Length: 314
Image (cartoon, rainbow, N blue to C red; front, side, top):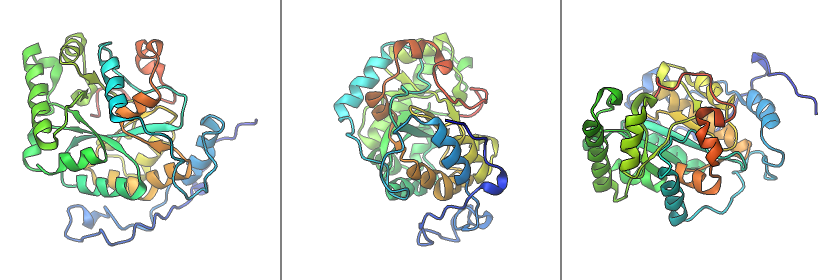
């Protein structure tokens, strides 16, 4: 099969989600700069439908109608999710992506909860998809109801108490940052937290050892939306859609207006059209686990990685 080049800018198509204005409130922070509404936004559907169709495995596009939801697959049970995470946690190595055998991937959201988290949850509900939220412990006091709501739409992870620069801390201080957050999430959402993501993606052998000692799995990413770097909605969508592949773990931040805009008008509609299943990290690892050899290779064990430096975004 002859591979085609990337579409040019004028090939980009617009996508309408039908979300409507019912959830738009002009008093909402960010509304004035076009956070929501914005029906004139150009999506990157041309890039997605042409370029990604050539990179996804044969048959992964499914047989449903282009505008319909992704084909349903049997979701691993909660016990299977837990066993998969615990098994990988015992290895003491960070996870950058899952295997490459299915049509599922995971969106992950860092640095919440916050002012736009409820909008992200509405989108997850509307598109019938799931995600993983890595929470900063000190923020839970301002948003005590959100962790339980987030848990209903996927999984929760620990992102330290203060979004700390962990390499500068002692092992005991690292443990305190993690365990304090873990307890706060447990109290708010009544869940045992087994996932951890280091702020900025920064880790070393001492941090890895401490996370393993706590029985947690260190989850990084292989696709970076670059929303943390100030990318606008169209750029966020391109950064994700150009690099996704089966088993991808995507780094995003839901409390940025442009991220919500990208999800609403481009990303979620495009991924639905491609019949890609969006699942939580535990579900992804249970249904399509990475091999031991893949884990040992780190980021190099993943495919279609974003060419950005790990250590600047989370």
